[in-house]
Image (cartoon, rainbow, N blue to C red; front, side):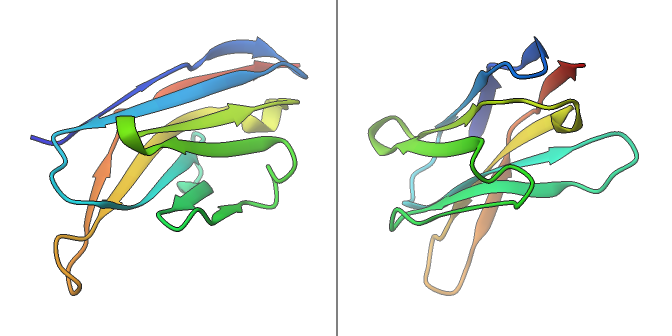
Length: 120
């Protein structure tokens, strides 16, 4: 079965850094995209960063210049390097993996979430 295991969350002071990791296992099709989302209490889940199979990356405006998404395709792992953290970054961060078994179908898988708390 497909599993996404996240790690790297924690409590840091404003201005600090964290690196989140998400390792995918049980995936038998090529990964089309890997992404990070986050959700703060009372807020909708928002897309933070995405990395496509072609190497393209996109970021939410709120994290642009501070966060970097990267992939290790051999390990089916995606990372999120978070620098210059702000209290507004406090949220549960979720890894998302998109696979395309066929040209016409798409499956999404989610990690369990990892808590990031940034103190002021």
